[in-house]
Image (tube, rainbow, N blue to C red; front, side):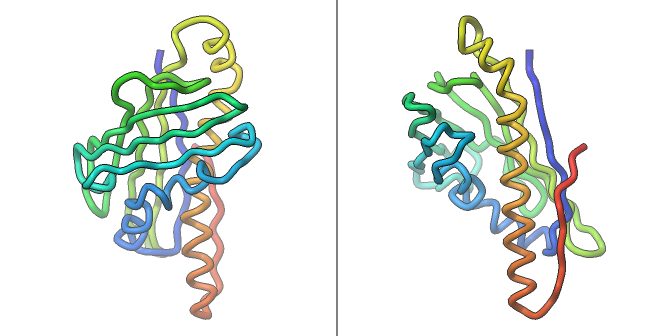
Length: 176
C-alpha cells in the first residue's frame, strides 16, 4: 500500500529560478545533511554519478545514519522537465528505517507573484516486523517534515534574496 504527502507553497521567484535552485539535490535535501531530531541526531551524505542528479537516469546515492542505525539508498532521476517538474525514485534494495521504496519530486507553475511549488513524496512501508509498525506510526510525520523542509527552504531562500535586494516579501507553506 502506497501512502503520500505533499506540500504546496508560493515562492517569490520565477519557475526558472526555483528550478535551478531545486535541481541541485544537495540544496534540495540540505535538511538531511544536518543532524536533527527527525534524523535521530544522524545525517545523510551524498554521492553523485557524472549526471549529478540533473539528467534522467542519473543516480544519487545517500548514506548515513539515523538513531544510531546505518542507512543507505540509491535514487534515480525519472523525470526532468525544466522549469516545470523533476521526479526521482529509489532503485534496488534500500536500508532505511521507516520507509521502504519511495518516489519524490516537485512541480512548478508560474503565478502572478512568482511560482507555485508542490513538493511530494509517495512511499511504501517496510513489509513486516517492527520496522513496519514503526513506519506506520512515524512515516506520515517524517514525510510531512521532509516535503515541508524542502518547500520552506525554497521559500526562505528567495524571500531572503528579495529582502537583500530591498524587496520585502513573505510566503508561508500551506498543506493540501
